[in-house]
Amino acid sequence: MTRFTFLFFILTLSAFHVDAQNHEITGEVLSEDSGAVEGLHVSNLTQNINTTTDAEGKFYIDVAVNDVLQVSSIQYKKVSLVLSETHIKNKRVVLYLEIQVNELAEVRIGRILTGNLYDDIQTTEVERPLDFYDVGIPGYTGKRKTKSERRLYEAQSFSLLPINPILNGLSGRTKMLKKRVALEKNTDAMFRLKDKLGRTFFESYPLEASKQMEFFYFCAEDEDFNRLTSGSDLEAFDFMVKKYQDFQHNLKK
Image 1 (cartoon, rainbow, N blue to C red):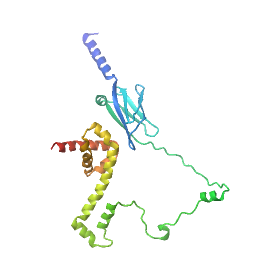
Image 2 (tube, rainbow, N blue to C red; image 1 turned 90 degrees about the vertical axis):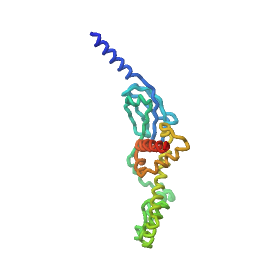
Image 3 (tube, one colour; image 1 turned 60 degrees about the vertical axis):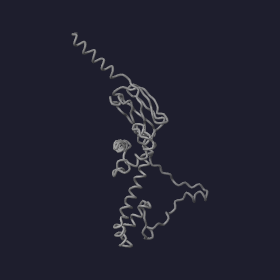
Image 4 (cartoon, rainbow, N blue to C red; image 1 turned 120 degrees about the vertical axis):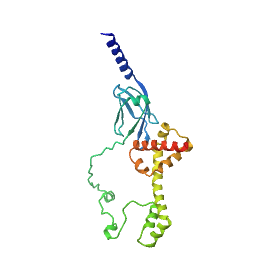
C-alpha cells in the first residue's frame, strides 16, 4: 500500500466516523388541535433509542445524520423524519401531527319492545315535525350572518328601499362595513393563530412581550392573511416568519 493510498484511507475513515457520531438534539411535537402534546412516544428507529415528550411537547434524543425519527400515538397519524446534516447542525426539529380519524363500521340497532308501555313509546319511531317545506313557506337554512354582515347586506340590498344602496355607496358606509366584516374574520383567525403557534414561534423568533400583540395585528393586516393561515400549521408558521422579518424591518426605521 502506497503512502498516498494509506493517507486517503485514514481520511475517509475519519470523515465517516465524524459523520456517524451521535449528537443530542431537542425536538418539539405540535398537533393541529391542541398545540404541544405530552406523553407521545418518540423513537430513533435507526439506533433503537426511545423517549417521550414532556408537558411542553419537547423531547431530547441522541441522533446521527440519516437516522429516522418516528412519533407515534393512537390519537394521531404516525410521523417519520429522516435527519439531515442541517437538523444535526441546528440541534432542533419540530414535528407536526394530524389527528387520526377512525371510521367505525355501521351498526344497526333494531327496535326491541320491552313490554313496558312507557319505555316502548319512548323508543318507537315517530314522524318528524312539520317544517316550512311542508307548508310551502320560505325559510332560511344557511349559516347565520354576524351583526356586521347583516348590516352590510342591508346596506347593499335593493329589495326594500332602492335609494339606500346608492346613498350608502356615496357616503362610504358600504365600504366601511366591508372593512368591518373582513376585520372581524381576520381578528378571529388572528387569535386562533396566536393561541396555537404563538408560544412556539417566539421561542425561535424572540420579540418583546409588549410588541407581540402588535406583531399579530400586523400579520392580520395582510390581505392574504386568512388564506395563508387557514391551511397547515407549517404554512402558517412560514407566513409568520416572513411577516416577522417585515415587522423587524419596520421597527428599525
